Length: 199
Image (cartoon, rainbow, N blue to C red; front, side, top):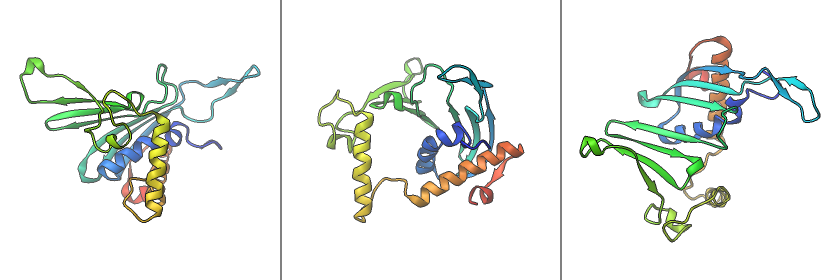
C-alpha cells in the first residue's frame, strides 16, 4: 500500500458502496483486482513521478441474501467527470441511476410488447417524494450543492434523534473495513469472507 492509500478503491469506491450497502446489505465476500493504467504521472513543474496507487479497481461482491454485485472504480476513465452510477437488474426489469444525470433515471420493464421494450428516461418531478419538498415544479432539477443542503438536514434530524437517511459512524466504519478487506483480497489474490470484512 502506498502512503496515500489504495487509490480508486478508497478514493471513489466508498460512495457506490454506501449505496449498495444501504439498498441491499453488506458484503459477505469479495475478490478484487486493481490496475495502474499509467506507470508515471506528469508533474506540474515538468518531469514525471511514478504512480504509487491503483487508478482502477474491479470488485466482485456477494452481498447479504445471495445478491451478486460488480463494483468498478476508475480514476482514469476518459470522458467521465464525477460519475457514480448504479444499475439494478431484477426478474422483471432494470433501473439505472447515474449521478452525472442526477435528475433522471432509466427504467426497463419486461411487460408490454417485445418490439416496444427498451429503457425509458424518467425525469424526477414533484410526484417523486420527497423531491416535491425541494423542487415544487416539474422540469427543474436539483444540483450537487442542493444535495449538501439535504445531507445537512438529515444530519440535523439524526442529532435530534429523528429518523434520518445518513451513513453514521458505525456504517462508515463497516464500509471502511470492507475497503481494507478488498485491498487485502487484491494483495493476497483471493476471496475474502465476511469474517475478514468485519475485522
